[in-house]
Length: 107
Image 1 (cartoon, rainbow, N blue to C red):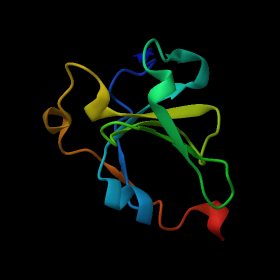
Image 2 (image 1 turned 45 degrees about the horizontal axis):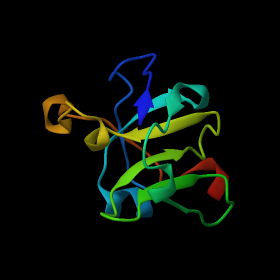
Image 3 (image 1 turned 30 degrees about the horizontal axis):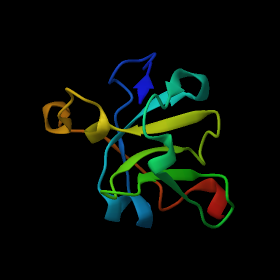
Image 4 (image 1 turned 60 degrees about the vertical axis):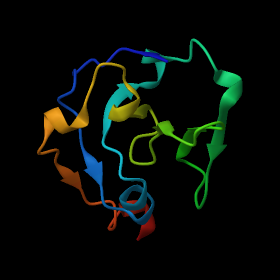
């Protein structure tokens, strides 16, 4: 995957919705046109539920979450910090949390 992070790692955050809490990954933001799958696209699988707005991608081989198209902003991807070569999410701690439990689309 090749991604351009227009705000660098400054957008790093964690979500406390039921899915993200269990997944445990911190993510950074990138516009849709700034992500390119350069290798292994055929090995990604898609997971959607509910409104079908969010699209979560996982590796079929190892199960790692790589990225997702956001429900909160469908024009952005959330990129798993742990899937970015050379980035250790621990180096960014504390990473802020967002309130995904009370998402406006769930009201």
